[in-house]
Image 1 (tube, rainbow, N blue to C red):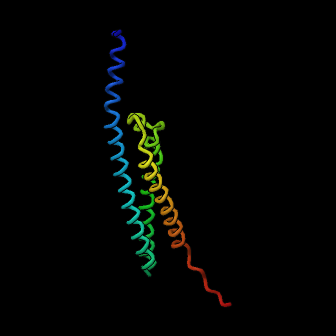
Image 2: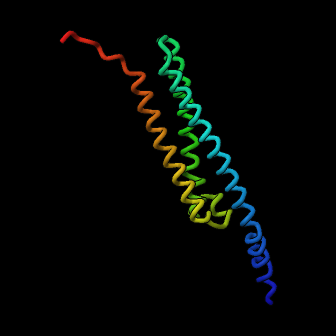
Length: 143
């Protein structure tokens, strides 16, 4: 074998051997982020329940602000997941995905995408509820 082939073939063999390890690390990172996001969705729902139950306008405003901060953190994490992690998971362009050397299996990818879609729908519902709670109460005019 030609000596100029040894270095590239060795590098390729090492990269292929590390690919499953990197994919598993990415999968663990993705699972960890997904768990954090699911917990944050529960927190948001609890916050909204408290907002709906309070009658004190100052307390409601404070709770709405806390809820807004939680939503903003959730959106930040969803953007991170939508970019790098989802691209890597699908075997496209991201640095982690390219280093990982492969795609998630179709069943895992489908589950992850469904979970993300569910979370996006819940976020929309939370945003709509946030807007409704911030709107002034409708005035009651005599009819």
